[in-house]
Image (cartoon, rainbow, N blue to C red; front, side, top):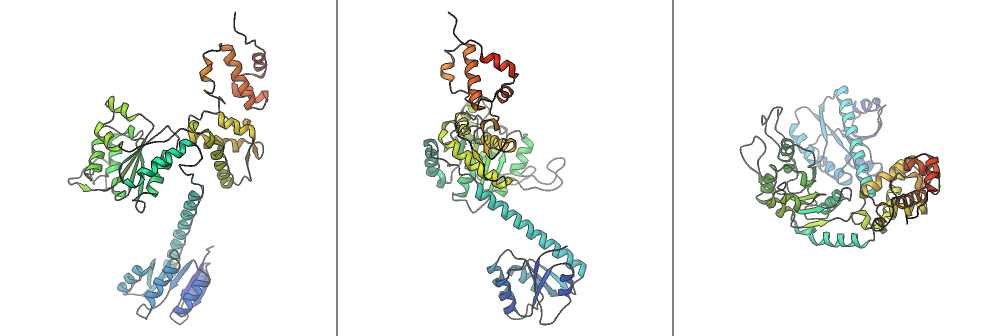
Length: 446
């Protein structure tokens, strides 16, 4: 059954459109003047306006424009006499979404209404998703650590320079989020932000995606295709894992950035492009240059404004606030109610090395929520491996193998709050073996 409220503005007489629309299941409200229609629109926003008027009447086009000012999302369907193409063009320019010629075929009307409402629902879903992303988007400068403070200060120094930027950092530290933040707060924020991950892409696929291709450029190129460079024109192109870019594609990127020209695959003429390049990598590009895997001229162009994102282990005071932020986000998305981190869990999270950084933290919290026993998350709800990986690394060289094992077992028991079964499972040994290892002497040989 169709749903939705439709405001029908008629020519001053009762036409057949109202009964046809109502028969399709839509709630209808009919008015016979533009003034009354505008009042009804303002009081009870409909989901669709069907305008069955002669546009040569005074004020009809202005009426459409006023509705667009009141609410640009509500679609307007125009019903016109056959042969009124010029009026239809003017109405679309004024803000009407679509038009039908009269007499209106009921089947055609049903199809058009269905498509209009489906597009409207899709717009609302996209808007809701964007609002959700904005609500739950974590700032790349979230936290109070000195490392994050230095990062924010550095970024704000370079953000308005409109020059290429290179974001460096380990996997999972939030390089993509920082790139988008730079775009959204930079001089090109009103234009497109286009993202591409260079890792694992072949030369041909990388070149085709970046620069597009002409029809017949290669087998399977049955039509011309614009590249990401064209889509990003006047905006920002973000090349994630730029260190993995094929060596033969790199000079074309350099030409696009320096000379503002590129040529599509199979093309015979250069095209103009104006983009800000943001690159990101977890690799040492200087080392790649020395090894001949990355062009030095591209590095000097891209790496002039480097930004180093600190790993999570260097901002331990931010771990629990970040965890609580993501916990609230996931609990809201999954409707889990209020979730909390036990004090022992907070200590466990702070002591973990987080080799996967923020991405690993998010994944660990998602798993913990799924396998939790209650609303309070305990260390046993997490599967973090070594709870204190590397925390005693400086002193390990002074310990025997037996002492290191005992230390590791003790840390695991603390993480599991003394639950032997859970500790044995995470250590990969039987419960009886765990008891035996706890009783093993740890004194150094004389």
